[in-house]
Amino acid sequence: MKRMAKLAVAVFGVMPVALVAQDARFRPSGEIPPAQGNGVRQSAVLYPDMRFPIEIGPAYANSQVYSTGGQYGPPGGQCAVTNYSYPWRDNFCEKRGHANPLCRTGRGHQGQDIRPRSCSANMYWTVAAEDGVIAQIGTFSVTLQGKSGAIYRYLHLNMKNLAVRRLDAVQKGQRIGQVSDTFKPGVPTTRHLHFEIIDAIRVGDKIIPTFVPPYSSLVAAYKKLPPEQQ
Amino acid sequence: MLSLYCGDANRRKRGATLRTILLLTTVCIAAAGPASAQSRLPVRVDWAAARQDLQRDRAALRAENQQFRAGGALQSELDKVRLPVLIINRGPVRAAPEFRQQGVSYVAAYQLPRATLSILGSATALDLPSGARSNRTESAYDEYIFTGVQDEEEDDVANLSFSRYGASYVLRLACERPEDQRCREPGFLRSVAAGLANVGGRP
Image (cartoon, rainbow over all chains, first blue to last red; front, top):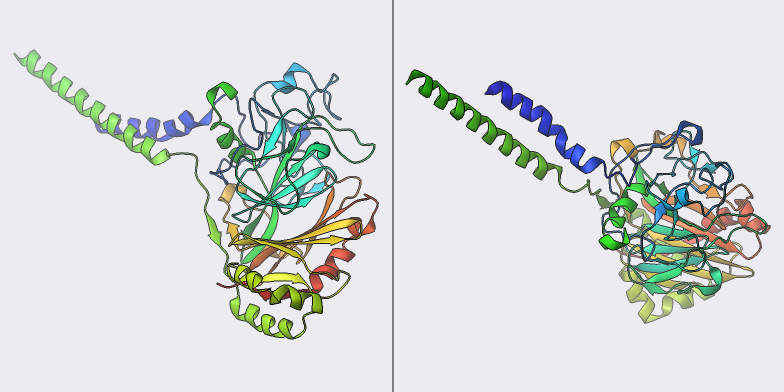
């Protein structure tokens, strides 16, 4: 009896982790192929109330530079079926030159790339992840300051057809702009949403505003979409 | 009879074991819950220092900022902000902002020649779980963290982030032209940060 009880504790102690773990559609956070970067695994849902930032699914989170058709990816076009398929992959710490203190090397990507339902530009709307204010509009991005203080950034939007203006108040789920492939003049990119979150984190006694890993929160938010959109 | 008795004893043992397993399963699943929801906590604002600077800065406000503060409706908005409200009072920007508050956060926005500038303040912070925490100590972080729009960066907006009075602030500058040095080099945003004045906010 005691032996069985001990065995039960051992087995069922890990079962909840196993049960939650692996929806095969989503690779674990921080799982980045060694040649593509040095991921940091963290499964905490930092933004449990966040709305998935693309209005309708399905959507496909994967690298736009290391996937098919990307700058460092296998040959082929950006519309390859593999780019519009599961599983999702975290690319917050993939190998890039951008400053990112939460990545082991101090550099990486700064957000998550997400492809929309199909390989079409200017068709799928991004939406507010949280109630907030449109704080800034750039040449290919929109910045939303959430009511909580978190800052959400949406890059590569169709800037000619935004649904918001600077300083507009927005509600969670409200349209912002369409997923597109806008970028710096003369620099190509794929049709995708680069979604990033800047937030204040505690480091010792300091408060540091920096990029935070969005992947696990995106997975949790995505799972709240209607089943037919996943 | 003996064998029947033993059989009964074994069944009683299995029953007890199954009950134990079921109980443990229930406890474990209940304990697992949803994926861990991380806490967002209010920062500890140094209101004493903020009030001191508010007194000092009030006496030195530029005319456009005095006008900005003078409006009764604006004062009630400032009173709703739970962190010191910093706006530009010295340096290269001479304008009053447009202002939006959200209680624990605010945006002050400026239209500049060929650019727009926003100040984003927040009175909350995340306590990251151990696996996600930075592997750097606090001393490794510069007081001001700048990212520009250099060719190798993915961004179209220059960013200067810092903490003051225990709250966090981010200056974001969007330039119409990518070659605009104000967005490529930290000097402009640093001078903006140096010229900020405290005009309100309350605990």
